[in-house]
Length: 365
Image (cartoon, rainbow, N blue to C red):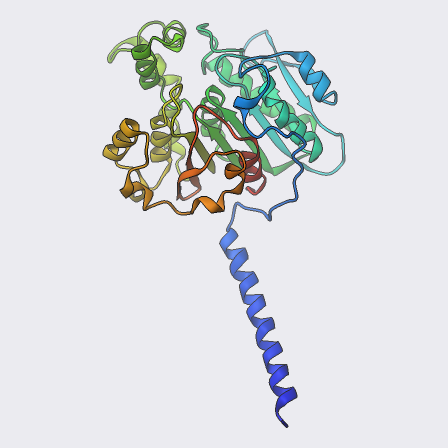
């Protein structure tokens, strides 16, 4: 037919225009604050911290040296007193600007916490800078621990040390914490809303007063450690109550809602830090219309199932979270409000290595 070539040309032109428009839509969908997904290396075969050999609190320098000989054991002078803070630090020394991964140890251990070795291995494999500070060590009841002013200052010192010592891509500074480390990650992020491109908080302790109540009712040691650090039982109106509030992210996080990009992930069957801690953190960061009603939180805590009304709000299906699925941690709920994301997964007091790292890698200021 005489109009065949013309029709084919017009068809080709139309396809090109459609492809360009689709590409523009994809870029627009990525939005400010995200980068194209990278091909990242995950050198460790471990998928979750609860599978780490030796347990969650084990902290041996020899294991770090065996698995990550490139990582240095360093000392950082404190800006708050005359002490020095121990930390683990890695920088390849390459001239290019690199992402910084700052990882905070959990409640009952220190900067040598071995479950974080796969995170250090990840940083080495992908040429990221890595810092793993001590910030006054484990939260064992000493007043200088447990998100004290000294501990917060030490975290700040470690952050500044890494930024000064390495060629850092300032648009890609990342913070990650698990359990008590997630508590401190939310603390540090709330004090540096213009620094971190992304914060991954796994099973976070969000409010020390309510977490104390949870642990006291169960006879757990954490209740006594909180009382020792805060100067007594945090009953309403007491000085210990005020001190616990001061040491809780719940006091500061609402002030930076919408200003920090956070992924909160929690196992629905967690009995160490109940998932209501994560849900309240999400509510304090979310837009008002996106918050979870208290009655739904109460129902979830009672049944350890996502209420139907809440499940219907889930923004994605489980098949869109392959890295949770490969760790046998099906996603039960996904909510997003502004720069805040919440994932409830089938699991207990756990952190999955790969989803958090992959999520962080996509964030950019």
